[in-house]
Image 1: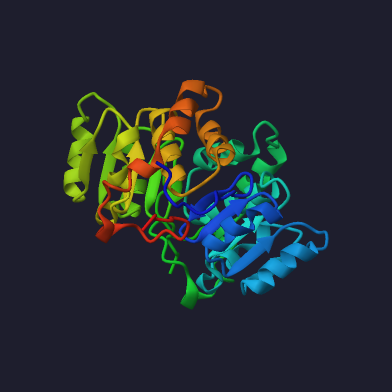
Image 2 (image 1 turned 90 degrees about the horizontal axis):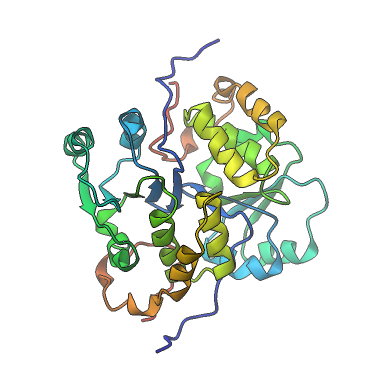
Length: 164
Length: 164
């Protein structure tokens, strides 16, 4: 018996949920749009430097999704931590290195140990894990971020401990 | 400058968020308890057959977490899909095969393509992916599950499409 399902959904490669309302993935293609629509995204943070493709821009416009574009990852934390931008999808090209660095820094704010952070980093960057990325994450000073975040719109993550 | 952080948190190995309020991991040890506490879990679904360790039972009791124990994964879906059990953590020993099968079946209910499901399965079972597990997921008939779920307590996952 076949139930009246809608068509199958195709998440972008390397897609996963990072924390409530924060997702990560590789670069979303047209075939991924129906899936992304289901997520009810309010914003997308892309870490690529190139122009965003026209068909992606149209998709964002049609679905009222804000686009944030930054070429460098590490210091953009406060941004992901502002609940007014959630649900948010973070992506680069492969969803491995740049996205992996950003998520790694986020995990430091969530007080994960480096062992756990690197495990996750390698799970998504395998088999091309870069030790420089892991060093970047290790050197990232989470304590500097709290000065920059908007205290009124922090996400309600159970595992997030703010120092005030 | 060192801010007054609490101690670091150690997630169980292979930990991740599957969907809102559904987590997966390897077998939680004592060192992981402070992390688990932060998740505000209402229940844990363990797929191991052995007795649950005494210290884990005590942790669950102290934190009012319900324990569900089943040796076989595939037909326990309705269970994970009942929002009254959320937040829920699903685990076996390594968080690779049994947990991977169950999450794979869950992804079918969320209408992911097999390609995406197997990508995720392999990411967490690597380098010990089993083709029989993937075959199990492929043969799993999602349409049979809907008869069993409690319609009144379905999770509010955007990507979940129910056939009624």
